[in-house]
Image 1: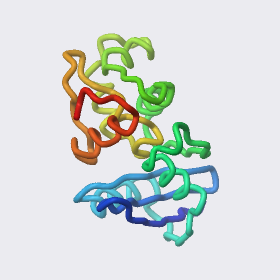
Image 2: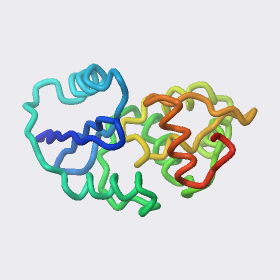
Image 3: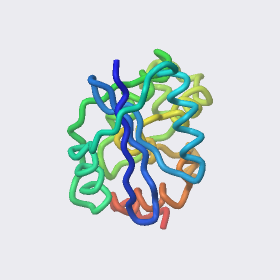
Image 4: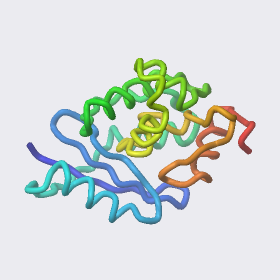
Length: 167
């Protein structure tokens, strides 16, 4: 299997993309993105050579979303993680644009209501930021919670979706 990579800049952020023949497998940004991407690649694709790809469709959809012109992504995804993590990520994908869910909500939806902390950890490992909309998940007490790419970007994404209580 080949691993294709690309980067782009948007609004002061540098985004890293990776995909396989199956679909988008990684999208992230933050100050330690190179280390994060390297760790992800070494875990799931240790012996694969990276090949550059423009990823025009992926970048176009991300750009449209970040400009408020797209609410859903139409991209095939290739999810690499444990069965539990993939079930959490699939459930997070069902959270509609402009709506929030709590870590507890996600735990209940996957029929593991006691696994709130494990759900939060799985969400923190989401390899495809905002395409799998982990920014729409908050704490039960209404607090913003964490976000691997930083709380400022999480607030920006929520404002973009007209969820203004985190301005």
